[in-house]
Image 1: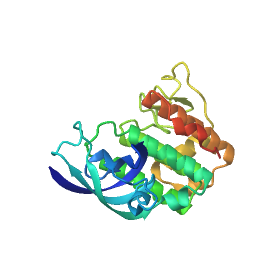
Image 2: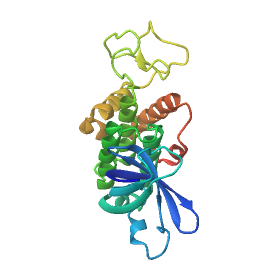
Image 3: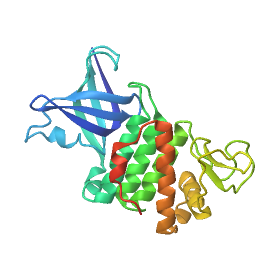
Length: 249
């Protein structure tokens, strides 16, 4: 039996019995963790208010043994709020739907419980902080997060040089199967021809060029979001349930 402490983001919750919940978190040191929080659904529980989706928390667990992926789930024994991002997210539909898609994506990219994924963790923290602050359009923040999550997962798309032969860009054609833009010689069936502005926008979101991204026209934002969604679905092999509710710019 052991106690361990970590900080993490609450990804989702599930009801357990009459008053408990199973909490799924993405933590800094232990990756994705599922744990039981006793009594958090009781009306007087202050503990439960801290364990809602989008919350960044410092949390202590009690585990029977050191294996987080064993048959028994660890217990949440203490928690302190680091940042209540949900306060500014759940009250706005566009932010809420974008944030929900971020949480689902983070969980999908951390398939194995107990394995640290610090890059994905830090990426999620930064995205939620930006989303809660309202500094940029929620749709743009989401697309930037999705592109960077893909890059962290080893699926970085190319928006300039040919993804197949490396021919310097700009290149006209885009193929989700090929890994991004491709030249005329590497073009494959099913390739599309996006507008140069949409490709420029996606490159800006991937690299963090917010001045370029914020200046994009709504039609190019919508076009870019469609490409991001198609690319994400291809590499995840099945779509995100929450993405269908996201408002497009």
